[in-house]
Amino acid sequence: KSYLRLPDRSPADQAEDDELTSLIVAAREQAEILQGRDLIRKQFDLSLDYWFNYRIELRDPLASVDLFQYKDSTGAVTVMAENSDFIVDTARHPGFVSPPYNKTWPTFATWPSSAILIRFTSGYAPGSPFWSDAGARVKNGMKLLINNWYHNRLPFEKGMTATAEYPYAVTACLSYGSLVRAR
Image (tube, rainbow, N blue to C red; front, side, top):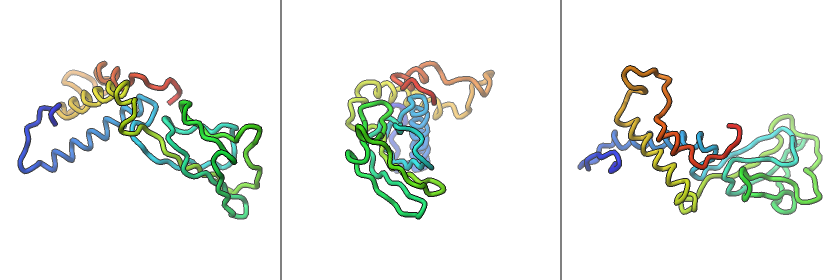
């Protein structure tokens, strides 16, 4: 609110607070698209029909693998153990899981669909060094974008086309330090 130079309201304007919250979420999501990584901690489920690769890349930055299991054709579920059935590499970008050295993925007759489940957590923790480096510029880009959306309720300026790109300052800040890979 101070960045947008909004006055303190007593009582608080709940509609305004809700609007600002939705703009913050939308700006973070836009930054995540341009960054190619998750900026806040999130948990995902990845379902696979079969082992398609030796290394399975997950979202960036990978924080942990919380569950890894597979279901065979009889419906029996086998939960895999980290470091004996699979290893997790969170130092690589993006992080991945793979069988331990000199091992392969288990061979089994798969369940017809979504036989393999990997539940994992990705994103930066609040005290991560990212937030004092590249993340600081990303936050500035988010503030610029939120300011633009809040004060210019139309998606384009008068005389501009609706497909005009965000101002360079916004895309430069939101893209700073992004991962170079297919999105």
